[in-house]
Image 1 (cartoon, rainbow, N blue to C red):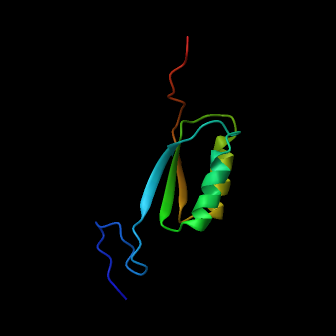
Image 2: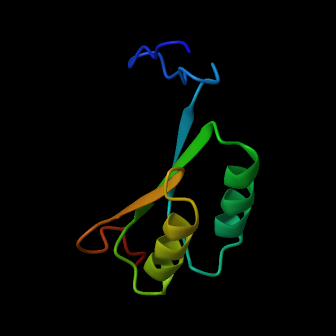
Length: 88
């Protein structure tokens, strides 16, 4: 068994390098969520962090579902309120 250097991003058991991808959450109808779920199942070295801007279109529920399905790889944070710029 090898030891993990906490700053290296390398898993001490498999020797794989871990990568975290930060994704801005978009509309709940976007197919990106299901693609990420499939990728997480195939690539244990990938981790995903979604940032939800407080939208009210159901995105938070989808992100909760994905987190329950892959809690080690898919996480999300939700802002208190939607901070996106509004088009005028």
